[in-house]
Image 1 (cartoon, one colour):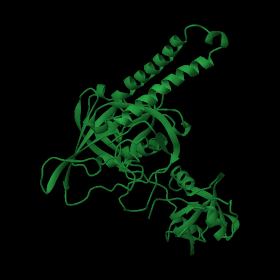
Image 2 (image 1 turned 45 degrees about the horizontal axis):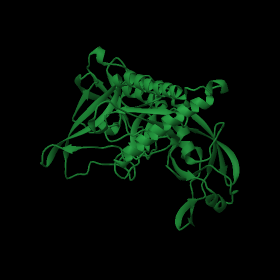
Image 3 (image 1 turned 90 degrees about the horizontal axis):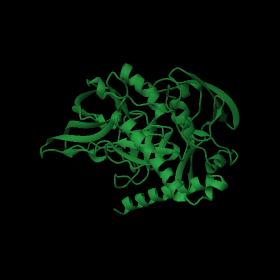
Image 4 (image 1 turned 60 degrees about the vertical axis):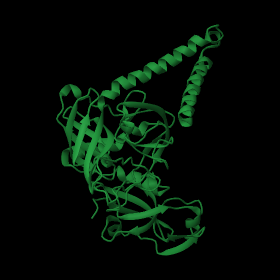
Length: 398
């Protein structure tokens, strides 16, 4: 209750602030009139109309997804990573060894052919999927493609044409911190709920929910928002002030598995790349270098006889037979202790990707995600303190 009142007070404060800012921006002769309350009212009315328009335009595109899954209750189905809630919600329907479980989630209409986009973790392992549109139409859905590494999945439904209202995508690379962010989804199964906030940060890299299988990935360039999102919002939309999708709401950081003001959305730039491939082939092929590493910091740099201000992506491990191994990159070969923690050092340090500088490992991962399988990349590498160039060809994991 206290959090709800806090959110209300913040909203009222922002409205008051916008009204006062509008007065400050007016010419002096206009601002001195005797009717400032009318100006403030106009600003608030404009904001309200804008939010109403966004909801009217976008909500018909958002669907409610109910998953029914046969699951052995003796096994723990959750693969959630510590501190990260991927909204895996399930409610047992009957007390038996094999229980039928339902998980609420969200999705949105991609095209007029009946493709629905949602999160992979919403529909993974589903036996039956039910999709409910904003007009009350209920149809069955079938997974046609999924991708663990971006946490995206595509469903196919046979729905009336009048129920299919495809979303409009924005270019998430143009999003800036401070811009309006509106989330529409089905938190706790409450259909077509809209919440409002701002873009809080960019370039976050939450872990992909791989369940410990295969190579470890992070999702790059994820959008952080304070727009309240909760269990059931997964697979819904985060839109800008034009009602265009800038991201797919996916996860939060919260010890209570409820909104704490830190939510994450998979950026539309990734959605635009992955979804068409899922529709066409059922999967998305990611480029892979065959390395793991860490960001070079002053302690690690000094241990390698580099300048303390040197930055880059330190190569720690190399997969035998992978692209990095074939290109001759070197992994770390010794261990040091920093603040009581053992850290490996001595490997090559990647400082540039083609003509773009690399100052940390997350930047390298983000650049890799923008690369296609088979594409050749020129790395600038510090090898034994000397700067050399290495050409790698990214390919799919072995």
